[in-house]
Length: 585
Image 1 (spheres, helix red, strand yellow):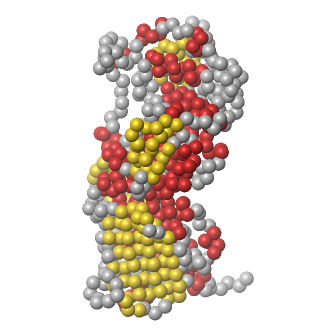
Image 2: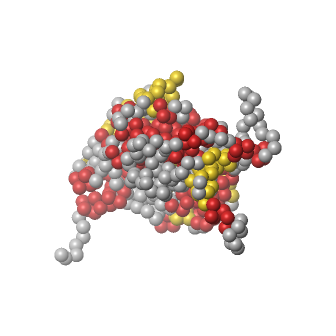
Image 3: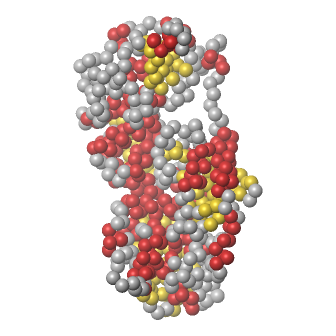
């Protein structure tokens, strides 16, 4: 084929492909335009997850009638003039591509009025073709109405995901901008339902409460740090509040939401050794740097940035977050009283802590006998009951170390058991055994637990309420993004219903087909992980012994449901070598 210039229609649609990936992309571009225009109120309406309608109304400066047609043209902007301006950008938009790109793949209507004008103006753009500017009555500000997105690019339309996923992307985006601009009032309407509304009073923690619930907002740790032209503010979660993925790690650089790998890595380095493998913090951080020290023009959607002094920024974020973590949540240590001598006494007069005398307790061997006729309880992993690696021998309890590990003696040496991983395995096998028999007993709570979720999580949970009931949870809608947990599996009696529900939602967000049988085990494992006893939790002698008995009865006692070992075995032979009883080491 001969070389030829692309038609303006094809060129516009190619450009739109870089800027407009999904309905959330439209919301992002138009929200950023509204913020650049100084808006104090931004109202966002969507229908059919943004496929048929995305409308954003703001009370910003507005667009003069004689500039309206130019605003919808490619490469038209009021935010920079010459190339040097690219190196000190202080606005969110600057390329002049958003409106032109959106208009080329939708039916777009722009209605705007500036304060100096007595009436507003309206322009319709259909598939990149602009009509005539009309005079209309309108409030000061701008309203962008985008209808039938991708109507003229059906191939792009087919790549959109489910309504739940597309709405979740929109909610996640607006949630982040609401936190970044707490002085702006945001309102999101999905059909006739208001899914998000903020006060615009500047209080970020109140926005956190509206988005994630009061309990989460209270736990978040505030970060405030300044150093040589760098400023970092915002919130990070303590080590007790985590997620199963990085989706809730949010960074804004000079007011712009970015998804920068180096920034996320710096933050995770601050949590190094403080989080379990596979757990991630919940954070919203705002980095301010000199505009000349950051290049925001390195990605088509401005999602990535490049810093002049990358190492300096990395180190600053790592140190600032780590300092906040250690200031609010000092590293836990075991009391010296637990290492011999007198031990603390509870209000009931019972000594608590490690009792080294229990190393000589006598246990009826019948209590430790595993019923050989008991059917396997874990049908979701290879059955390895006869494997010497999978099974464990009868164990004699010795004690607990650091309120985290249980020490036991077996016929072939010493066993160190991770109480959290072991309890995970026990709960998982019991729950899955009940599930396979289709008889998971449920226990009503004395008082319903009210849980507030982020908008995107609430939407993901709604269709799954019948599924939760099948698993022993009774959950009801209780207002916008709020639910009541009225009952939970009897196996988890005494556990935190809020933690269990949030653990389930995390999996719904990761997998859009949670009703599939292979996902049920994953859901069960996640809940068991959240509700199992934690490291650092002192167990009574009876609780330690019961955990050992239950672990011995498991089909796969050597690992937790996630594959982490539950125990370490030191054979008698190994111990004798270490102590030099069999010659030099």
